[in-house]
Image (cartoon, protein in one colour):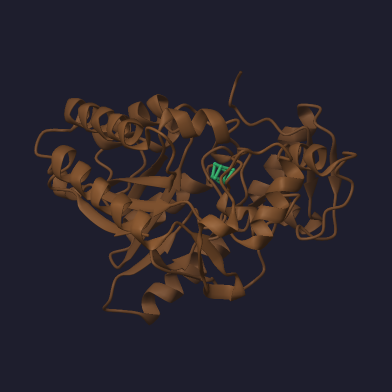
Length: 347
Ligand code: SF4
C-alpha cells in the first residue's frame, strides 16, 4: 500500500486564493479531478461522510482543508520549544494512540495554512522579542508535517527561513519517510529533524498508514548524511511481555544505521533522544474507543497513576515503580548504544 497522501476531497477558504500557494493548490487539485469546495472557515468543516465514528474518522483523514491562519499569536510548546510553528494540523496517519485524540476530536481532517510568509513574520517578531536569547519553534505540535510537504513545500521554506535566522531554531518530528525534498534545504544546522520511533510490535498493532520503523531508521540515516542535527523520540513506550527485548532491538538497529551513515566529523553528541511513556486522558480514551472500538490499547485506569495535567486534562500514566524501571532500562540502552547522545527527557 502506498503511503503517499492523496486527499479524496478538498475544502478551501476563499481567502486562501489571495496567496500564491493557496491558488496553486486549488488549481492543482482541480486539475487532478479531486472534488473541491469552498468553506467559510477551516475550523468548521461539514460534509465529511460516514455513518459511524470510525468511518467519519477514516474520511476525515483523507480530507484536506486549505486555510489561512489568522491568529497573531503562537501557542507555547513546553518542554520541547518556546513556541509552536503552525504550518499544518493533523496528519493522514491513523495511530490508535495518537496524542492529538484529546484535542482534535473524532474528525481530525488535515489543515494546511497558505499564508506562510505572515506566519514566518510572526516567528521573526517573536525571535526579536527574546534577543539575545535563542528562540525555539516546534513544527509538529499539532501534526505530522511531512505527508503534505509534497503539496505545500512549507516545511522546506520554514527550514530555510530558520537557516537565515541567527537566533531562531526549528525542530519537528515525523514518522514519515518521504523526506527527499528536504535533504538539500539550506538548514545551516538550525533545524533539528527528529523521527518518532517505536518497536515493530507496537507499530504493527497500533499504527495504521505509517512507514515501518526500519524505513524510518533508514530515512534518519539520510537526514544525518545531509548534516541536519538529528533526534529520535521513542514514543509512546508500552510495557508488554517482551518489551525490553523489543526496544533493545530498536535501539541496536538505530545505532547501527547511524554509524553507517554518519558524515565524517559527526559527533554523536549532536544526537538528541526523547522518551515518552504511554499515557492517556479520559477524553482521548472515549474518542479512541469510538473510532477503534476493538482497540487493545492498554487503557485501564485502575492500572495507572492519575496525574493532573496542563489545560485541565488529567493523564493516566504508568505506576511510579514501572516508570522508574522503564527509565532505568532506557538509560542503560543509551549507555550501550548512544553513549554520547543528549537525553532531553524521559516522561
Ligand atoms: Fe498522530 Fe503522529 Fe500517528 Fe499522525 S503519525 S496519527 S500525528 S501519532
